[in-house]
Image 1 (cartoon, rainbow, N blue to C red):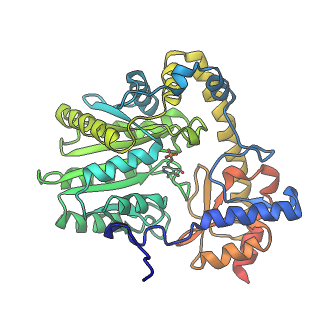
Image 2 (image 1 turned 180 degrees about the horizontal axis):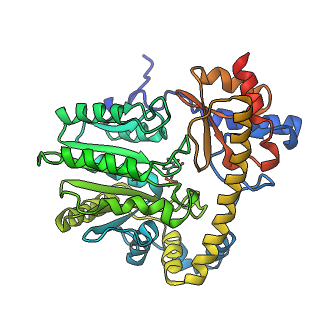
Image 3 (image 1 turned 135 degrees about the vertical axis):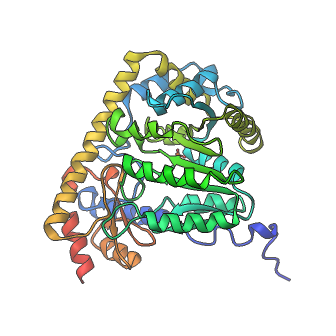
Amino acid sequence: MVIETLVASHAVGKGAEPDAVFAILKAANAATAKYGKGQVINASIGALYTEEEKFATLPTVEAYFRSIPAEELMNYAPISGLPEFLEAAIADTFQGFQPPHTYARAIATPGGTGGVRHAIYNYVEQGEKVLVPDWAWGPYHTIAAEHLRGTETYEMFDRDFHFNFDAFTEKAEGLLKTQNNFLAIFNTPAHNPTGYSLTVEEWRQILDLCKAWAANEQKKIILLLDMAYLDYAGDVEETRQFMRLFEALPANVLILIAYSMSKAYLIYGMRSGALIALSSSPEVAQEFERISAFSNRGVWSNGTRGAQRLLADLAKDPVLRSKVTAERNVYRDLLKQRSAILLEEARAVDLQLMPYQSGFFITVPTAQPRQLVEKLMSENLFTVPLKKGIRLAICAVPTYKVPGMAQKIKAALST
Ligand SMILES: Cc1ncc(COP(=O)(O)O)c(C=O)c1O
């Protein structure tokens, strides 16, 4: 007898779908080797690349890492994270926009991914569902499935490309009929994959809905804000103003924020971030701290001390911090420059894009994403297929290669 599986029943079939991005990257590398770098546009990479198509770093961050003594770089961190790091993560997130009379607590996690994991596992019952938009980072579904939870999706945009309240409300209220624990994930600002940011008014409406649902005290309303691209979306004031709306929320409404150092400091592989809880209730905040510390111990133990040390030291040194901000803003402007060309050319050739405002990615909606990706691949333009469109990683394409991309995509869609 051929034995084909030894795994436990919940693990059967995991990972059966091939990784589309990996295959595309391989094809892009093969094309570069064959035709030369100048002939290939690789818009499939989810990291910032320089105008010379090299991995981008913030020089002050890189120099800092290379100077940290081994003990601070390589030693264990405390299970919850270095206390100064936790304070710094909260400060970096709110930058003066934490509403009064709220309690903020943080726990170190390996990137934003770790925060998403803790939120889904600790705030949703086994077998129940998390609410995510139809345009969303794929791993939300994977993380939910890995932890024996499911996902419910709603159409994120209405016909005018505004946040679709009707769809959100309908699906949320559907879940609230059968679940007491309700968790909705919002990836904003600079949403992956569209580049959309919820407006202050949209936030106000979402919170009004949550407050109404929370009138039933059995309901636990949790909003997880995945803010992986926060610092590429604009200035402190414009990106954080909405946080003031989190004032005076009922105790059964909890705001969780997945804070990530990956993009903000261009240290993706250092795996550092935090899950931050914001509550009007000191008990809820304390409970969050306690259960999250337990989860850290039970899943990955502790986080990357060197990255925690970096953030803690930046918090203490305004000069160093402003150098890092200035270096990051160079890339923020570069993203703006690259995207402006694409948006302008898309308008000129009447290519429909999802409503991009900022961030690493621009998305073209299409009912046949795989076909479009393959057509573009045959022209040495490498992109990533999504369920309802294709994703262009403007973060990885040098400015001089952007002109012509929109025309190429428009032509491929028309044939
Ligand atoms: C939308 C979104 N959320 C979260 C993450 C998590 O990143 P990390 O775990 O490296 O912080 C990413 C990374 O690509 C992302 O695109």
